[in-house]
Length: 345
Image (cartoon, rainbow, N blue to C red; front, top):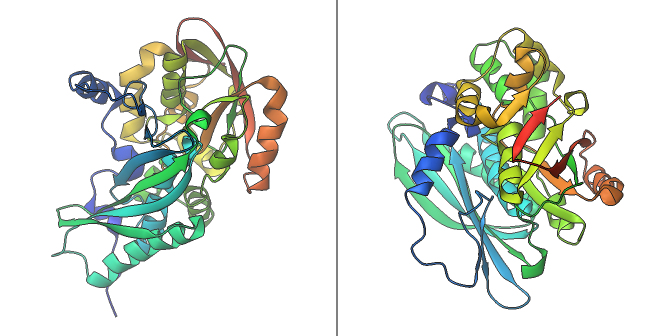
């Protein structure tokens, strides 16, 4: 029998918590602008959107993205499922339907048995099968830390793309999944996560954001992104910057994972939360106790969709999410005219 492998002991950070800090990433992108931008490249790096979009013709545009990370959990099957769900989320966040994926695989072959690696790949394949797409190829290398993810490709009508930069003053904000995944992962590494907490972690990180494809047909849905490594505050701030609006979030209305609240109130959080705040805290104000700031900056691996829509269609958006099993989806705030910033009250 193969000795049980603890994947997280091979990685210095897990899931979307191992993203490059937002301030560093902003400098790197600013210093590496696109030299040539073809007219058919509808979405590039200009607003830190979830995927690139290239127009093929008047009816079709291709959506392309890649996402991969080191283990957030020890179970190889669960790691593969989480990484694949997270990667496909960027396609759905653009209002697109995925068509196929490519695997991105980096494994320490001298440390991980082939059986474990195969379970990781099988976990990712199971999510793609659930999404109705194949993994049609990929690339693998021998590296020090385990890395797994996907290149996701999708199709959307060029006039139905959901950018993160087209929100309007007066829009309400809707969040599709509860917050707290990064905090749960920190508790897991410390051996403090309960079986129920682990179940909640897997439940949400493997729930595919299929509702995003439905939102493409809703004209009054103005902007969409998914909440991942930069936390709710960071990804909402990207909407504010791109749309030139100010956001107000009602903390009491945020859907939160109950066990994550218990852990963060006890002082457990990720280092990525601190890095996030250092990168954008000057543009975010959070009232109340310190743990509230940790919650809105918590890196979400495979987090929920964040939607900006006209108030009159909020009930329709909520119904679309709930029909897909997102029972905790909630209206969490609004956007108004003003200097781009996020205020959590």
